[in-house]
Length: 535
Ligand code: NAP
Image (cartoon, rainbow, N blue to C red; front, side):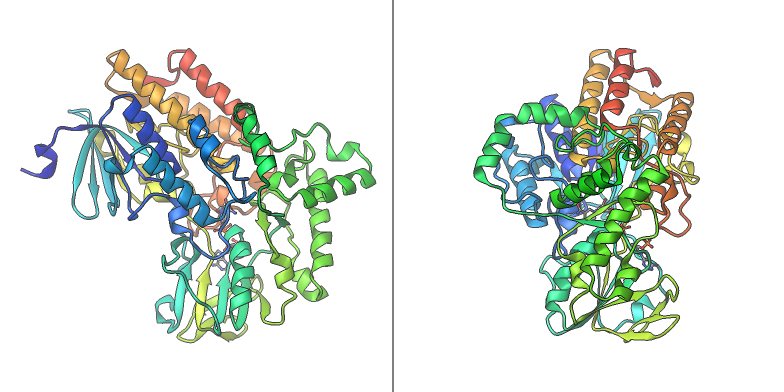
């Protein structure tokens, strides 16, 4: 008899102990459900467990990038800086795990290898890489959207004699780059954060840039106790505003004007203020920056002008100047990023024309020349949104594979369920606002929706829930329309899977706004779980 048969099935098995998995467990406990969370890492934290690279910091303000579900928690937790560092966020997540006594139902060091639907018994069986099995009536994915690191398959990667790192798999003990010749590949959000830190330590830093990216200064600072107290006094209002907002952030002013209906002087002043404010809200200063190419050019040009002002060598400044429309790839937030290129020990290598040909024993060889290095840091991003799920062998009704179903791009109803995989829920799944929002706001909305749904199923004696294929198809269409109403599909971004070779080019998150999305999800419930098959 194997492990599975010896045990009573659980009510729920949750995959992942990051922000989503922890809150899901807390809600399931409140429902009196027997639940277990399976977590690959040895501790809680999800993305904040793995991304320990120097400079790792959130780009949503701490007072907003945190749970709202427990008032005592949000009142008592003290955030020290405007944008929290990775260590502070990890302390917070650990505090939450302890405060709500969550660890006793989390199996650490348990990476899920497969999840198979047993239609006859209406169960899911999950197997870990270590050979353990867990059986439950419901399976909830809390695997995160940016959790599977993408390591480009450079020739000779294993031949490098020095040390090779990925920002999303950073060693727990940290890395000392003192006196080393370091190469960083990638200049997205991770790259712009890690590069200034490595530059300060390393003897020499080569940055291998394929695409110059937009970044605005974070203007991070310690949080003033008076300011925090005033904010906390109105926490419920702020949280509600975030839930109703476009991207799950209360602090971004809601734009009311087109960039094209004001004078050039007025625009320059507004962009200047946006730059000084320091937030990714920069692309939301006007209503149409992400909708109209001419409006977008005005916002893009301002940042380009700033780059030219900051970077002293005009040739380097030109190579650092983005050529795409701002916001169509995720806008970065940095501290001293462009300034770093004024340092004597930093060289920018443009690999857009002379790409990286291979990694050699001694370093990196582009099609132009070889660079000798002691360490290489890949800040090359993630197989976003679908990678972690497709990495698990998930089999639905009739043995259908999720990876196969999503071969031409992910399909999910409301991003919450995918047809043919009954009783499998996806927190921040494809087709939901997820990465286009303050993800904690979106996680809370999904967790609460799923918990309410499970309570409803129990109350009405419903054992099986699936997404209706026609409803799913209509939602995928809605997701496409929402994206096409913006400029977002025009960038070569990971939102589209463009960063991973061979990945289908499909815009994955829902761009219609967090507040609007919440209304749709709530209405679906009011309409008796419209678009779901309950039996
Ligand atoms: P990313 O935005 O996908 O950036 C990856 C970088 O690696 C890009 O510059 C990319 O160039 C480059 N790259 C990939 N393959 C390459 C190759 N074969 N040769 C040369 N260059 C290559 O990944 P990320 O920086 O890790 O950020 C991912 C997302 O995580 C962010 O957008 C954000 O949502 C989140 N994040 C947030 C924070 C924060 O809160 N502050 C920090 C880090 C990450 P191309 O652009 O040409 O593809």
